Amino acid sequence: MMVIIILIINIIYVSFFTIRMILTLKGYRYVAAFVSMIEIVIYVMGLGLVLDNLNHIQNVIAYAVGYGIGVIVGMKIEEKLALGYITVNVITKEYDKDLPKQLRASGYGVTNWAANGLEGDRMALQILTPRKYELKLYQKIKELDPKAFIIAYEPKTIYGGFWVKNVKRGKLKHE
Image (tube, rainbow, N blue to C red):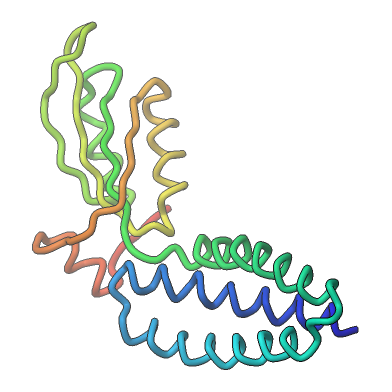
């Protein structure tokens, strides 16, 4: 029974630890501080149980296994929370003036310009969206241009622009 308790406590602790680290990296300092208070209470309880029962190797193993599982669980939770934004750069297969309009109609912030590739004229697009819409955006791009070249990254700082104001006001209309 002790093995199960240690395993579960460590999964919970490391999940909180992982989420706190991600919150810290994304600039949610006050939420991260609150999560860290819960995290440390769980940590002290779990470590105390292991240290009180060091004579049983299965407790140490449960602690280690719980740590590993906790990292995975924490990452899965963060994926579900989908905090922050994603910037997606797209280079179309062919120059298509309707693609940016269709993406904007779906609520995405799009900046586009003409580009030249090895095989001719292209359109380059830069699209900003909350991470929770990331997969829908990829799906929409592939639907509109199956041969588009896509690169995505997380911006560290976003400042200005009409689109950011709409996001903060909750006025996005994603399909």
